[in-house]
Image (cartoon, rainbow, N blue to C red; front, side, top):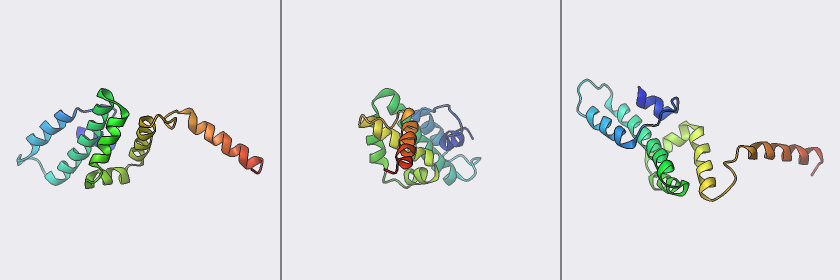
Length: 124
């Protein structure tokens, strides 16, 4: 349950990648664990998110973006970005931060809105 909440983004607690791998190994082969394939998929998604969080706290946004690019061919990563739009937004922000862009600034959305209204009102 805890891993599922983490993978879905409904908890703010960040799990360490090693902890997830250890729990996954304990689950494997346990006869009490029902629907292991679903649990394995959730573990994969949670590990991917935890690894990105760890890279952001220990390295730079560029390293995290490179990791996402390397893992992009895996099916569960694609599903994660399709199911959760917030993941796409987070990746856009990461790419902007890695490229020294200003997209990650919270004021940029408001500024863009003001500029759109201005040019729409003035017919430009």
